[in-house]
Image (cartoon, rainbow, N blue to C red; front, side, top):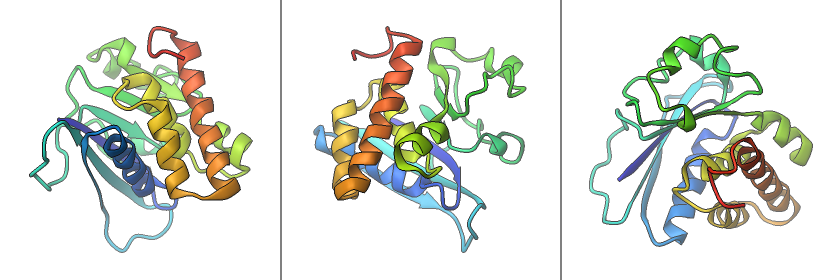
Length: 193
């Protein structure tokens, strides 16, 4: 089972990202599960969303304590929430920022992880370019597909188009593809372009 925990803020699309990731996995023949955890929070409050993907039925329904991958939609959460809790040394960590782990002040911390599984992607900038709005979720899904290979970029793009119709869907699909391409350019060995 591959477990993903998405940390974001209300209004950034963390819940929608987990749902689209589960649809992408399902469309590739996997069993999938997605759900959020939050209260009656206001826009901007921390939100956590979860996604599980597996080749066999998923029977557990609890929050993910030991993720195989973390997607952090807002780097300010690094100082406010224990986003890395439970992540083992082989976890993938994808952070929405143009800054490096060292610039974020977590360079020493990241030494306990496999460097090829740690990545920052300027997803908000990519979203602004393609959507005209700062919603990083679909761009991060494209980056996730390139970094992990758990789902293909085609499955991510199809899930996005299932969720959003017309021009909005196409703009989000382009943001995902742009982030995927960004990651591949960073390290061509991560995924096949």
